Image (tube, rainbow, N blue to C red; front, side):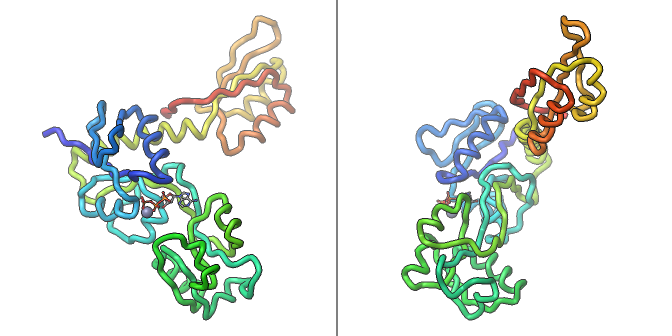
Length: 286
Ligand code: ATP
Ligand code: ZN
């Protein structure tokens, strides 16, 4: 039997664009033109279900969907029986406790005896237990940032990325409770056929992620500086070195990681590299 892998993605919201872009970068064509609930991919045995992000862990646990793209924050709060397969590198945010800019609360210990509004009661209560803080949790489902202003709570625990929502509500971050990004989750009892489709998809996701974290670099260098430059540029195996038309000079090609990008470029320059070109990599299979 030819089975389809069923994936749950957010119908609309902050994870939608990243989820669809990732599938596209994996070479999977999904058109969601008519705002449908489910769509069959054109060129991969994948059926996409568009759902509210909060429901995704449960649907994956119950095998309504086999896999899903969802925030780590939602996984932590929903506490469902699913496997976390791979971080996806988008939807980055943090769950933080925030307090009024001017007010009695200055430290985490000051939260004792106070009320904190949140949509993440489970994650927050675990955090408070760990920090031995005795505060009341007021669960609300949205617009958490207005809770202090309307007198519902003295502090909040909510998702933050730029901090602009906090700023415009005269709040400031006190503590990060959880760092989060989008995650690929899967049902724990996939059939062998679905497991192998998941592995195929995961192989592509890893190649896309790796390519994003790396850049292709080309540079020219005098031959007497090549040893030093090769040490700075390990590349995937070792750099490619080609002679230039001008004698005594070579062209060096390699791959460098986004993490230490500027440090590497600076030391390349300091070691005599010239005409440095940086090129994005589309896919990277190692
Ligand atoms: P839904 O209708 O699907 O329930 P929602 O309103 O709960 O949507 P969004 O605000 O679209 O959800 O957020 C979806 C996810 O995006 C969050 O759970 C989180 O993982 C991630 N995210 C990234 N940055 C932020 C941010 N600044 N604020 C809120 N969520 C963010
Ligand atoms: Zn939601």
